[in-house]
Length: 474
Ligand SMILES: Cc1ncc(COP(=O)(O)O)c(C=O)c1O
Image 1 (cartoon, rainbow, N blue to C red):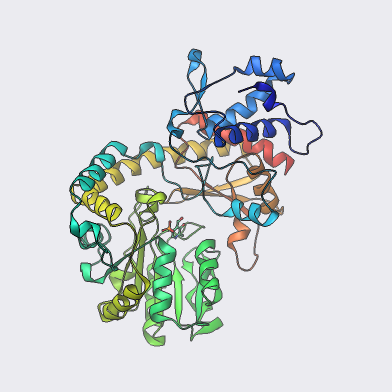
Image 2: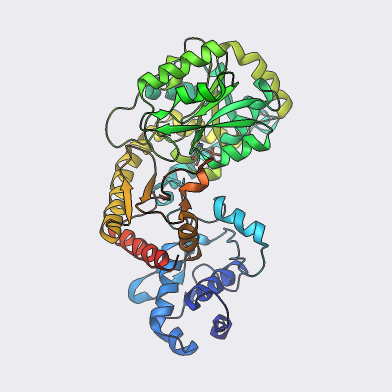
């Protein structure tokens, strides 16, 4: 590629290193640069474009840490061969509308970005095993596998999930109670269609998972914000605000995003309210697989004597989000209704992928992978926490969470977490603002970030230095 194509525009508002970064991304996207292609050294590009070396270096560092570039030491830097066959979205800096750009900041789509929330360690996924199982599956493709799949989900996968939940989460359920869905929101959609009338009111944790909140509002539900404190959802406040609510959505194992576990008294109080009010509890157990110290409390589902809990889990963290698979466990009394709704709604996605996940679980790879990931995440969490403490002593208070794959760094003074997160995003760091997860603003803001792909202390230090520089300008 002609290096002059990279020539930045000095009158442009974006800093020059950012323009360079975006131009490289665009060149990769449009195929001008192909995986494996060499890129010029920092020194020669700086001299060709008449730029300071530090400017080029900064752009190269971003491209490397985000996986676009692969630095091979003395052998030079190349476009990452791992991008082969993947569609890399354009940076879109000059083409997307304001609205679309705002969406891109909150919805995690496209290639992995540095510190991206909710993304598991993609480098540590056992791809070889996965590809082998997927290939075996395809080779044995028969008539049954090629016709319409069961709308409730592939039975062997449901059996594997039931076995996993029994052993790992103490949830006694049969595969008849399990519905495989295309992600968590699809599980919510099935619940709304089956059990809730449009306009039904429900308690929603405040702060709480922004995407499920948006989905439920879009589906016509009326959400009553209920604050969370160190014991999780405040059930008494929920009762004061709307004792007759039809449902409550909770993340009891690891509150999203604050990270505390709901205490046992609160769990029992919530179950008691639901039984008396004949309300539904939607238990979102999205990242319970990862815990670094202490024993997890029993899920609400395992304490659910009156059949009020709808339990959801996802494969997005335990495997990878590109799979688009989650599951829902419904009370025995509701199986028929859910079955009828699932039949009208249609299938749970590709049978082939479901069968591959089933084989992965049946053959013990799932349990092994989770065991490895627990140790890996404990280390990666440590890298990021240490680096943040070193760089931000005083300005950010990093909360140590017992589990999950994200961190919350709380601001220690009144400043806008949205502008700080925006400044960080402008520098390619996929940071989210705590206040965007709140329904009612309260307290100081915070920054949410994922640590699963922070592979070593050097990367942690580079990223936090970049964050510090971005926050200075934010
Ligand atoms: C709180 C919470 N619930 C559920 C999910 C799972 O959603 P999905 O299955 O759509 O990946 C996530 C994923 O990030 C989450 O953060």
